[in-house]
Length: 350
Image (cartoon, rainbow, N blue to C red; front, side, top):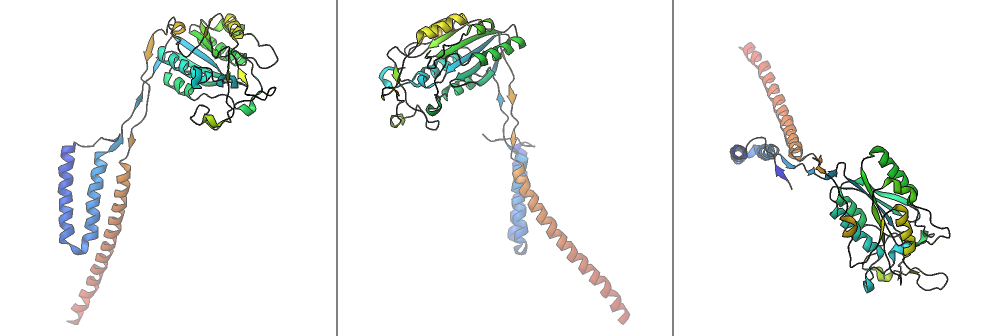
């Protein structure tokens, strides 16, 4: 919203501008030959008034809570194709990723002031959100999560994020050894590559809690393809094909693998919770303490000034006046020189 930051009180600026405008308007009517000049002077008064009023977009302060000696929450999310299985909310066609998004939002809302980091993994692990105390950034990142592009899917391994998490957590431990850290692993436990999943045990030394959250059902669900362009959760999803089982030629079905998820939880030393659309995760969030939350002053954006726009136009009018006055001055000097040379000639004739 544009506001005014006048250089003088408005109660003074308006009367002064009104008087100057009235004078310019009077001269505009009274001097037919000088109408262009007086019209420009009238515009100049109005522009000068705008400059003096100083229209601005006020500075904004982005004030966000930051945790000091409190809690760091690391969230690892499985984004392989199986997480697009439509067995989250019965016949509604909601996917497991829908459940993940809801849980990420609940974490951000239930732990204000905590630091959050979001890691996703499919063919590779990527840190989507570096550690931040801005819960809205976490929610926004969670809302745009999509499954991997179907064409590039080459099978999944549930231990894909271990190496990346190990580096991130080790660095955090080195920089701030007194900080409390928790890890949440969100996935369906489905291991589709031939190799057995690796262990998460090396991460246990860096965390003080968390949970493994499992998504999906024993009956399983079919998965729609994702080409990387269309929104996999849009209203147009019925036009997309389902991922096919190469062995049967029918739509492939993904099922939750709870033994794998329980093994991950045991290796991390945290509890395993099977997620459903009818329950929340308060049971795993309520024991967590954020600690003392310090609200920082935040970063302040500078005010956006607009006075320069009328000032630039005012400068053009001033330039026109300078040119006009310079021309008039040259004409006057020429007339004076002519008068000076003509006077002696008349005296000589006498």
